[in-house]
Image 1 (cartoon, one colour):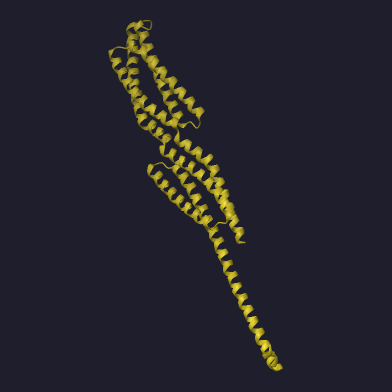
Image 2 (tube, rainbow, N blue to C red; image 1 turned 60 degrees about the horizontal axis):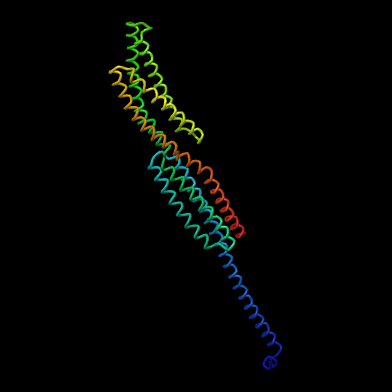
Length: 317
């Protein structure tokens, strides 16, 4: 440069220093700018992964809440409690779904693949969860229990009381005939036969009632079928023994016997409802699904969410 060449040595030195300082300042400014941009990007990356970790943690919490609400529904003893836990389940599911949507927006391609697997398993679990809640709301096992031990028990007590009245009458007939005819008389023999028939009918009735309770309390299909067979067998024996009895008793006895048949038929109707509810066994089925198929899918979904959390933690490191 002609102008620079005409300058004296001192001016040249000063000019060179000034130019170098300006260049250094420019370089420093550019460096600081890029450093600041890197810090901003790093901060954004940290914030992004922190948000993903936080969202995944909240999803995990919602999963636990849904699972807990499911167990509470199974253990609930009133419809009001079931409704309350069902409403809680709905809230937790909605929160979880909203957080999953936010997490997917922030996820990279690998994260989205993990989320696809998670959502597939979670959807499967929700189907089991719905089935558990539907079966629990049927509440057939508890309804069978209450029907049998309340209304059924009251009716059965009246049936037994009627039988006891007939037995007392026949026992008195036996005493009277023994006194008048002796133990070899035909009337005495018939009276004893009638008394034994009634006693056996009462025993059949008690066995049928016990089989009904066993049916309600049965934990598997085999025990249910066994209890059902006993009930049917005892019921047939009662009906078989009632046929000859009517021809053996007098008019007063027939009045009591007719009352017994009427009450027995009413108890049979209640018992049929009890058995149908017990065989449906919705409460036990709900427990089985919750503890077996539902539990497996829930655990798989939990493991996948742990993988998502772990990936986000590694991305943050």
